[in-house]
Amino acid sequence: MSRDIDVLHLGRDRVICVYELDGVIVDPGPASCLDTLIDRLGRSEPRALLLTHIHLDHAGAAGVLCRRYPKLQVYVHENGAPHLVDPSKLLESAGRLHGDDMWELWGEVAPVPAERIHALAGGETIEGFRVAYTPGHASHHVCYLHEDSGDAYVGDTTGVRIPPYDHTIAPTPPPDIDVEAWLDSLHTVASWNPQSLCLTHFGRVTDVAEHLHRMRCALTDQADSARLDGEEGFIAKFESRLGEATDPATVEVFEQAAPPDQLYQGLERYWRKRAAA
Ligand SMILES: [Zn+2]
Image 1 (tube, rainbow, N blue to C red):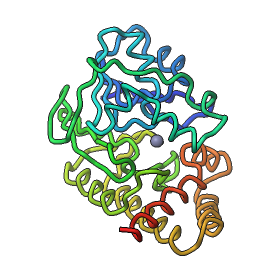
Image 2: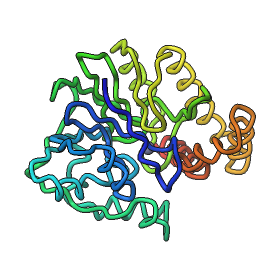
Image 3: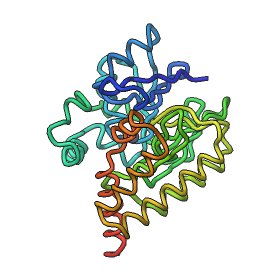
Image 4: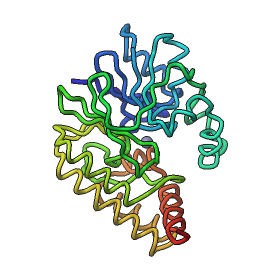
């Protein structure tokens, strides 16, 4: 079983969970949380990073970790790989969302040496994990099934759910959101019949079928709301549901992991692209 490490993003618990399993780390989180991660790893030296996607809350620390551990290998979808080698476009796109808060949120984003990167297409097995291509949240998202344990490492594919609550939301920031592809990806994860889902935000989920159902509903409801209610209506509905289902401290955790205005922007862009196509 993996170690589930809360890296205490901005000092807050239940925002970003990093998983470590026999020297393999799934999504190391951002460099701003690196002290906590290194501390929790103790003396064990990681040999591989499995990245679900390159967003900074998941993979921001990859380059800094490569500098620290000279043998560390990095697995990532082939569409994401070029942006690890040269993170300038990634930083530009994140900068549009986060503005002046970039450093505080994510810390240093160092390039990953190209020779450390193993580009994935989906369908391969690496380090004991089966890989599936799971676009929807990001066009370069993959999920990993650990074959021995049946645990699926799903990044953002199966949503954001903050314990102890089962309220689930779809993280839909710009620029890649694709609702149809995402629903297909949920099907892909379900077809693995995993014994648990390991979410980045936040932690391990064992009521797999119920959770996937809640996630499908959240994704389609949010997509409809973004199309019909406008930004203010979308945010009001989202926040009132969240407030009813959880408590004020947990609302802050949800909104740190998935800021509501960004959720609207990603879906608004999705509908605009679809109308133009
Ligand atoms: Zn995320």
